[in-house]
Length: 364
Image 1: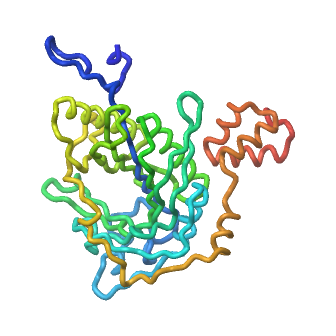
Image 2: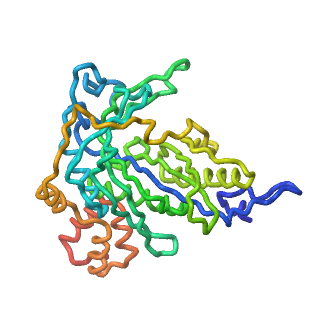
């Protein structure tokens, strides 16, 4: 019956004599890392454009390509957008900030390290509120929001024999929004990513286009028996490029992990990828720990301090978000359903705002 209903755990039906897996005795635990590309005109540490769709390796310079002797210069607009996101998510804003080098070697990383905020995230704690299927609300706690630069892009379908590299995206400013392990189902994960995408669009922080890679999601997934306070070994599924695939990947990976436990096998801490075509995950590498990246303060970037006046000026510029607009429209005699539909998309809500300035007949 579950299989016919499209339930993700279809492998409940076995040949005669096989043990049936009881998935209901397990709980899925998920933490999400959402990478949002900031809507600046230029990269995080140089003046190269971040515009999407340019010919490969045209938005580059000696700084992007990490030529010897080049030095980074901080993008002030990226700081403003990161603070705006943190304030909208009820975070504590760190006034003392600095960047670290995250060392690893991969062809799309020209410097051989990524500049990120490992020790001092610009935004700490906070939460994003989601609506559950039963209509109730749930606060998904955030661990941090920090700034970092993006890597380049590996192209595997350009040449039959070789992988090609496009460095246009290298150095693009990102915020990484990291949750606590508060998510308990793929449905909650779907609702969370939907809410985050809506939020970054309302704030004009990111365009939220997952198909273009400006919003990407990594899911840290583990399973445990219900009632067990100890978290299970987690597996990270990288670079999920649609909200639907976030949901699918969590269902598939949770089922795989439960299957391993039921067989008495050990779960390895891995980084995996999701194949959307056949609905499976596959291993990329064993998961690294923080020590493997050899973090240290970037000596080429000075620490920066945020004044109270700077933070408050950003707070004052935050636009009216969906929840407030829903209350406003319901006060204009619209139903909650109408108000919610109108505010799901910021452009539609802005259009509605301009129309009702000319009439008192809000419903029409």
